[in-house]
Length: 178
Image 1 (tube, rainbow, N blue to C red):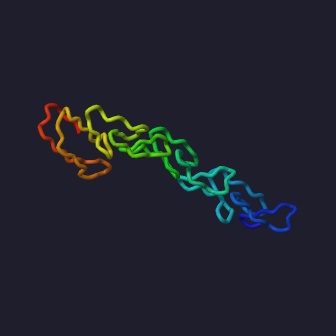
Image 2 (cartoon, helix red, strand yellow):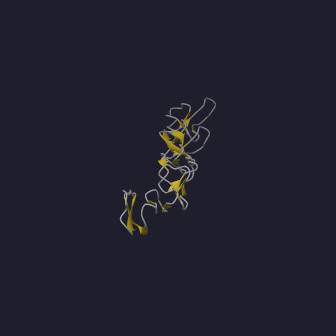
Image 3 (cartoon, rainbow, N blue to C red):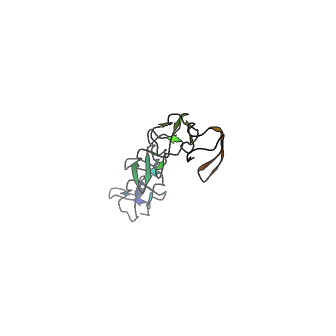
């Protein structure tokens, strides 16, 4: 029999191996592909599932990694709290600044009056008397008891960092970290 086919003693002719089984030919029996691999079209070798996909032994094809999990190195691994793993993830990503991840399956924008540092599972309350800007605070938490803000605006985003233009109505009496 040619590669990818087999023949049992009771068969008159060679038959193709079923999906996810392979044979080196010569009439040898078909061997199953391991989990996280599928047979090539010729049924001559097993090929790993693409990154971000997996296959259990009972599945006919590779499937996208489910939300809340990541698929790498032939493993399906649960995403940890504070990380975001949408469907098809090949690695976990920390929940982005300005967002909260109540579960590893979802990443939600931080609501007004709250702030969400990277890795946040629940939005944090803005400190009393302060104003938390949206999006992406805590980069800018303005506390009026320390200085009076006239205007504030996002100037640009550079390498994932927000830069602000802040005008103060008076020189602060204490060091101010923005």
